[in-house]
Image (tube, rainbow, N blue to C red; front, side):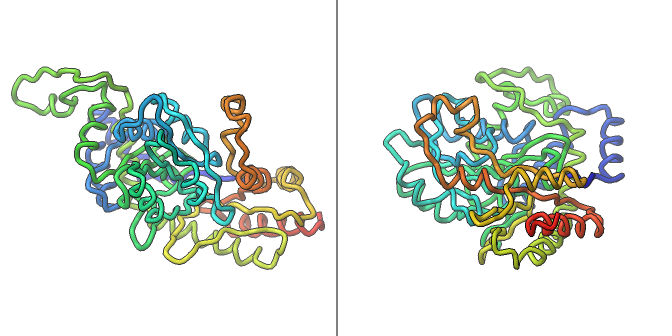
Length: 378
């Protein structure tokens, strides 16, 4: 079976985890601080806060931005459900905007139409690694006095207008889940240029504790902590951070290798007129966290038929990005929510295998089988 994805982990990561375990410091400690510093430097952000996953990162970002009960946050429905859930966690209401089918990112014109007196923030998603138009959304947020938050779960290593994702705005949330370009098993990171928000999120991730364990442990004087406000246990472990440090050092190489595979797919499928391929406009640089193909209405084979035939022939695939408003947890409350562009894109797109190292024969197999199925030769 050719899998849809798998993390690129080597003996370097295993040794880093092993060595960290033997230090005796395995919870949030010096390796976490090192990972944060290196990730901030990599992205060009002033600060970085490591957390347990991207969902908790988004939750803390909502709190830092001042989003609360009664507020509205505009976001795409076509995104993993954690995007909307993070808004619900603070008692606010997700307001879903349409997407641009060329890149699956939120449509700025529809976003502006959804702004009301209750809108507090705009949450953009860099879908499957393709950057959204950050400058345009920042200008829109500034125009209406809103906070811009970036869900960059899939975008580590991607770039927008020559700068890595992570420094363009003041709240950017990343994921290190195994399906992402780099992984710590699970884990997340928030980058910010706002020092007050940075300090607040560091406080909240560790139960609102005034002095963290590392500072207390390293101090030569007796220190008693206080719990300043009700916080959360959103810490990353030093074991995860040690793996993350090794992964981060390889990130640019990993992205370069992923882009080579994406280029193979783009070239192999460019003459198939019934599909739409990813579009990387000038100034946009994707890490190709996933490679999604959109079937046009004239495609002779259905999405599900293609996926089943690929599976029968030993190739995994995945449906396109979900639409949150049609999931059971949301569909009753959003029964009157109609997003035809998002729904069509979700129902007619397929994610093909892309990971490193991916054998040349496996790349060729995916290309050959996909073409034959689309052309009804299988």
